[in-house]
Length: 270
Image 1 (cartoon, one colour):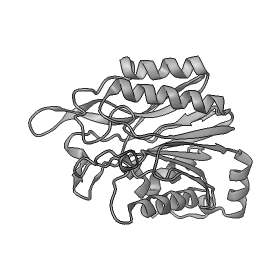
Image 2 (image 1 turned 180 degrees about the vertical axis):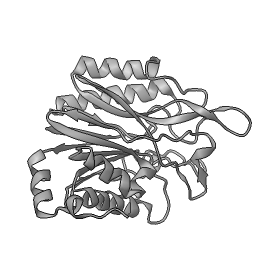
Image 3 (image 1 turned 60 degrees about the vertical axis):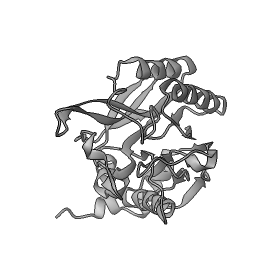
């Protein structure tokens, strides 16, 4: 199966971000991809208000993404914001940091479980955490979902593998700073090796690569989307700027890796 990672730099404007999704989805389809992955916060970049744009999965933004996927015959994974159930200290309802997955024969979503309360940013101030891992099937393979800060927590990736995932998708808007891009790649490699899955780690591009400012402590992306083998080898990588990265997936490669390195079968739970 051929897949693509769309490393984009989104902004405040929902329509402009939708146009990016459609453009890159068309490029991915033209390149032979059956699945295209967009970053976290594809709907609107962090550093902007999220409460005023959160919408249900049948709202206008998600519906347009769904229509593009149907028109092109491609599965799209994209980060958006949906209404939460909890409220902040002032009684304002929080949002959920959601991955929409839509396309021929596939319709599901994942709410980010681990919220980014680190490096001076408090995602939990405005975001309501999810609680349940999510996997989906496509082309005879099973894919697990994760979002950004989730990548620091191995149990989610091994749980997805226990649920049948041969591939883990990570959508991110990674915070910048000294060593952060190296951490992103290190963690993607580690989670692939932990779970003996292929990891498709798609991040927002670095706004600085487009001459755009970084908004305070908001995590707005560093680029360096990567495809990682079940042994933790980086198979392909982008730089900091926008781009489209293609990869070929083969369930047989994962099966072979698990036969040689059966960490899932050998591990103990304490």
